[in-house]
Length: 253
Image (cartoon, rainbow, N blue to C red):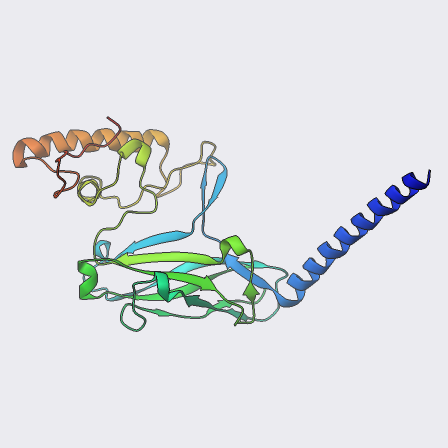
């Protein structure tokens, strides 16, 4: 009987301790507020974390010399009736971009009564990025009004250049392996630069989002267009300088 009573007391103590910890966590978040990167993709109702993105000036008007890239962040805790700042730092060991030359990192602002905001990074179009893209690795810090949130969502990698870079939604399953030559040909034929796919269950058509059947149709269109192009202009290779040259093809072989 004594053992049973001791066990019961132990269980109750553990429950109370867990509850106390949870309440403390909630109070901490509510009092201080924290933020974390919240870039996500949703495919067939499954949400996946996005921890890196690419941006290409080559897809923009040639007169555009700067652009501001916005990285989505989310609030952990309660909203406030006033604006709050949050900050990030660049990790130099794993970054190739130079501050002031390639980019300017700005502070973020979580506006009053909001739980979604964006970290702005001003990107500069420079001559050297016509040859090679540059990268920054970002990490949220505790230096602003809002501190660091979930550990798994504190870092983000951003790559950009004045060259074609793989889009966020290259459909590998339908288009096959990515290469710059395949991407350039797809843009020329379809006039599309990105291929986000719709979920299996949707509320209706959404501009700029494609169903599986549409992406399959794009692959067929591209292969047919390439056959005509090849007859008139000769082959396009997946990689121009590969030891074994392989012609482009959209799909799996």
